[in-house]
Every structure is written in C-alpha cells, then in structure tokens.
Length: 500
Image (cartoon, rainbow, N blue to C red; front, side, top):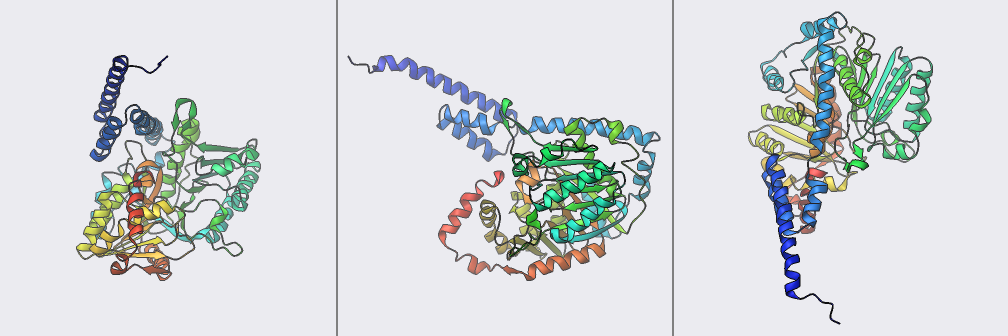
C-alpha cells in the first residue's frame, strides 16, 4: 500500500502553510513598522522572516521583539516617582538645603570653550547641574583603589552603599563582603547592589547566601531574567561602579570587586582607573544609587530621602563636576553617547580616549574621523590583548578608516587594560563606567562624570601618557598588509557589534 500523498492531497496543506506564512510575515511587518528601528535592522528582519518560513518568525519572536523598552519604562516610572518626592521635600524643609546647594554651587566653566561644551550638555543633563567645590583623586588599579575603599568602609559612621557589576567569590570579593558585614553588625546600615549576570559565579557559588541574615545589611541582585515570562535579558545590565560612605565620600570608575584587579604572584593587575570623590557632587551620586535601590526594592521614599542619607557637604576643592547618568530608560537613553559626541565634535586641539572595548556607533566613529581631519590631535588607547576577543576583532574593523583620517591608535601591552577616560583639549575629563561600545552606550545603566579641573586633568594625562609609553602605535601601511583572513574575521565580528 502506497502511503505517499498525492499532489492533490498536498496542495491544500501547502496553501494553508503559505497563508499562515503570509499572516506571520504581516504580523512581523506590523511590529517592525509600529516601532521605529534602524532601516538596515528592519529590512534584515523582513528578509529573514520571509525567506525562512515559520523558523524566521520564531527567531524574530525570540530575538527581534523589543522587550527592553517595557522593563526600561518601569525603571523610568520608578525614577519619576522618587524625583517627584525629592522635589516635594526640596520645596519643604527636609531637603531644602539640597536645593540651596544647587542654587549656590551650580556654575558655569571659566573659559569660552568650556562654557560652549557645558551648554551642549545642558539639554541632556537638565536634572544634573555642573557643581563647584569638588575634589577628585585618581587611583590606579585595585592595588591603589581597594586599600582606600576598605579604609573608607572602616571609617563609616552611618551608612555604606555599594554598587558594582562584578563581585568575585575570591579573595577580594570576600574581603569586601566580610568588611561590610562587620560594619553592619556594628550598627552601620549597608546596602549592596550587584549585577546578577556580571556576578554569575558569585551567585551560583553561594557567596551572597552567607550574608543573608546579617542585621543592617541588605543585598540586592540586579537582574532582568524572568524565565516564566520568556524574558532572558542579557542586556539592561547595571554596569555602574560606586562606593558611597555616609553620603559624604564616593568612589567611582571602572574597577570591579575581584582579585583580577590586584597584583598576584606572577600575575599583574588589570590596568584600570578609579577615583576618590569629595564635595557636593557626592549627593548626586548618592541619589543615583538610591534611584536604583528604589526600583529594585520598592523602598519607601521616607527612608531613601532622609537627611541622614543627604548630609550637608562643605566645599572640598575647585573641581567643577557634572553627573552623567545613562541607560535604556527613555529620559536617559544614549545620554552618555550624546555627551561623547558633543565633546568630540567640540574639540579644537586634542582628543585622548582610553577604552577597553572600542565598537562605537557609526556617528561617533565619524565624529572621530572628522576631528582628526580638521587637525585635532586624536589618540585612541586600547588593549592589545582583550578579555573579549570578539569585541577586539570587531573594533579592529574600524582601524583602517580611523588611521586613514589621522587618528593615532595605540595598543597597550599586557596586562589587560580595562580603563575608561576621555580628555578634551585639557579642559574636560569624562570618567566613569561607560565603554565605547553599543552595550554601554545604549543597553546598560552607566554613571560617568564630566570634570572641569586642571589639576585632575594634569594627573590623568600623566597616567595616560604612561599607558601610551607601554603601548605600540599602529602604522597604517603595515596595518594594511595584515593577512586577508584577519580582515574577514574583523568584518565578520563587526556584523555582531550591536550585541557585543
């Protein structure tokens, strides 16, 4: 007996399949047109869904639907709730001095160029004025930063706030957690935010379970993974790195709380920049932390906006500093990217950029080329050996065009360099947690500072020149003679730049 279906029997099923394929394609098309995307992305999804019946639609449902915006919207609503409560208290008596700080210390830079650059930031940073009276001290790597941070923890009297991407279940991570637990048992309030994806090993190895029942100590893992709702957000990471002591002192930069940032037997420390911060800008960093804490824990504003968390802070120096908060929330989306673009576009003499991951969006890459073409000395310092090889290969796809425009590229020899900094015309330094890649500029929550201070910039440039001295500058002619397989690999990896 022949069980094969005849053509006449198959035709209805094929017609039904074609109709269903058309319906799925139209559903995807409605989604694409209802949400503005980059044209190449939208056209690529249309091609995939049409060319691969059913499979293309399934792939789009898994990876093409923008589920990020809903979670980011919830973060935005939480931020707005806390902001309304803050404004109410500033207009009352509880935090009236905070408004007075903004009014008395909000300032303009002293030179025409600096004022021009600051005005460019005003539109995106309306809630974060440029504040006078601050002092910053650079700390290089964990060998310098960790002792200063641990000492500050020991000196805390009221509260300690920690926010980091990675806490390692290693010598350094355990030392910090043990020291925080000790201070909590002594009556100091301790709040810790770690990124659950960045700290995956610590999570699964049980590090945080050891500190669950410590009085006065709360630990919160930042996560957006909800398997029951098919939400596996590897994006929306909290990449900020902050330590706040009594609302009076702060540490910010690129260093995670893990042993790789320290010198060990036969292994050098990761090269990174961190900064100790004093002055009124600490209040803004404190508020940035508490916004995230409010979102993750639903803690009451009465607790988070108390005068004990926002003590009056005296002037500590002459640095003018502005907070740059960035993330996928609607009000802060691509803020740090816009600030970088404004700074690069405004540069007249010199641009120096230090970054571990260089995969900028097209408009920033073009801005760097344009600056170099108009005679601005433009230098890029990146690690020669990267801990994310795909990101390194993707970034190298841009080197030819950059060097052809006059950008000088320096590859720092090992150890791995994780530092992030941008210095423009010896006038402003942009420091903090953000890398020059799509993840930092669009998908992760980042905290940076714009600093106008000759003293700090002088110290920072000395550090950067030391990194350049330990680097090898690429030569365009020799670069173009690299093997053809390297070019294929670079261009292939660059196709995935938005995901790296």
